[in-house]
Image 1 (cartoon, rainbow, N blue to C red):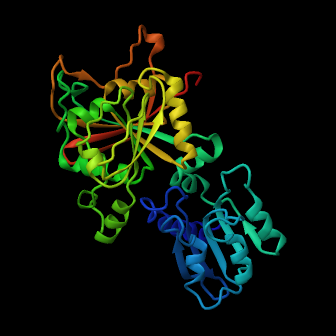
Image 2 (cartoon, rainbow, N blue to C red; image 1 turned 120 degrees about the vertical axis):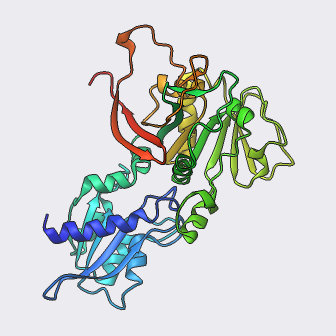
Length: 376
């Protein structure tokens, strides 16, 4: 890997990041076109995938030059080789006369992995990679997991006091953390394809679970684009207790109600669907089935925003990829609710975590942790 490869791939990764809130269910991809026949290689065009159904990163980059003959393309993900809502990017690069393709990572879909690279190679294009593969994978953890396992990436978001409490005994929980942390959660929601919660959270907080542009702290056009793609709001409500007039149903965006006996909500502003499922809040098998159903709906990243019981069920079932805990400098007392309802009897049952990030968010702290496999 040459310094030029690192430099231009780093720029492609930066471009891909610009699609963080708008490309789902597609991956975030960036591309730069480089002229290498001069004294110093230089970028002549850039592109990134901006929204599902719109041109991919390579096509957007090619649109920025009159002729791509002899150029080198740096792309964070193997160019696609199939016809979807847009044509195959591998063919577009070949037809444009691209001489070299440097890629960040191979397509994670085992059914098509390597096919785009093979097509380029057979057409006489020099293919180099992977380059900065770990960084390329970090762009799309949910897409990669769904392609490889048939399950989405699951993050559980929790807010707690310094003494590890998430709500008062009554269920009251607004607000433990400050506005900066709540803005950070808005960006987590915007990057997610679905938000999963339990009916008790909706009833206690009258939660809407929407992405609100004004709280994203992004440039106005980016915030508007992110808020325009509301995540699927999933409510586990096995006894069909969701009231007709709640905020969740009065705001636009898709809603999936997981109920034993699905009801209709004719006056809802939201687009409501129902899914029949058994006792979702105690059976890990049912939670797994729910995640499988969400993956079939092309959900890459799922955010669980729920109380200690449902969050504990996900954790106990081994379905959590990442815990994101916002810790506020406050005490709620011993009668308040714990972080997770996770009945463990002895030290041998403890669930160990790797803390991968700790940072201040306003007056609060955000801790990101990943479960450690029991056999490691």
